[in-house]
Image (cartoon, rainbow, N blue to C red; front, side, top):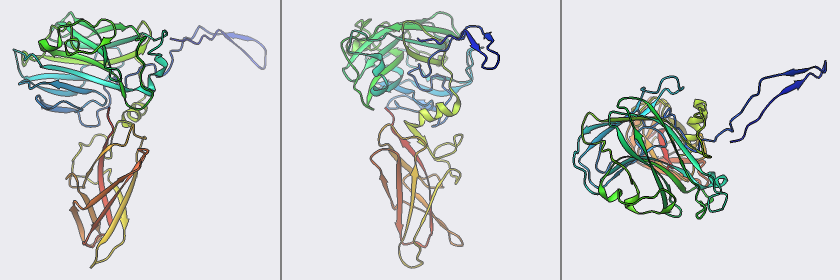
Length: 382
């Protein structure tokens, strides 16, 4: 961590020296994690019935729900207003058990994870003798006291290191800090692919809890959640809240790096973007936020309608696009003409550029419309 110290400033007019108290500045963007304050939730604020087959992104941007094997438990994942007092947070990620599974299968595991591009990690100097330590810190609250596993996973070289944190007091916000040594043997790829993941585990069957990985070592299933004692799915009274997640170079934690809302949203949009207004659920029947275009018109022959979209932020990679018409139907667009009305059809052609900056939609049918309108989601998540 570097600091900038200002002792005095000399006036250009009088030559007098004005002395100020020392000012220490933390480096910007030191938090590797994006949206660690859980403030951005483009996909929505609540997802229910999450269990077998429901791993993936559901609510909080950049935080993926990892579910393994075929559990019978189910959880609700939400953006919650419960936060630690006096820390500057307004949102947390909450998991609430809605269907219990008291006895875990050997292959059951539940965790949240967030991943990072290798090209953003080169300053950590992994694979060299100067590899930086990484310190993770976060606020956590649960009714379930006990040990939870936290892991770093190098997906380029398939290596892992794990540690545990302990929730000591039920229903109480606690700050946890843990430091991982740098990996001097394995570097990260210098590209836009996923190189590093942070995992925080909430339950694990015996397959994932057999081998220690205190320092970087080759991944095996038994090391994924070594030290995990808590089963967050053993009662429908169970919940967990987490916020203020930070991962930074160095051997100690600094105060959480709060970013402006627009900066945080833009960083999330590199991985996922929607055309709908932020507060509007994906698939809502609305023209608000629609992309519009026009084309040739004929009352008797096919009319070709086109629209082009430039993303708010260049995507990490060419994204998976889903198009919605103004009635909320996926894989359709809306075609309009004054005096004739609207139609919704699936005759659409999507073209994307190679540099993940824009895409176009063409609709060609035989109806007499002059304008095209559509909503979209663009997914380039790790």
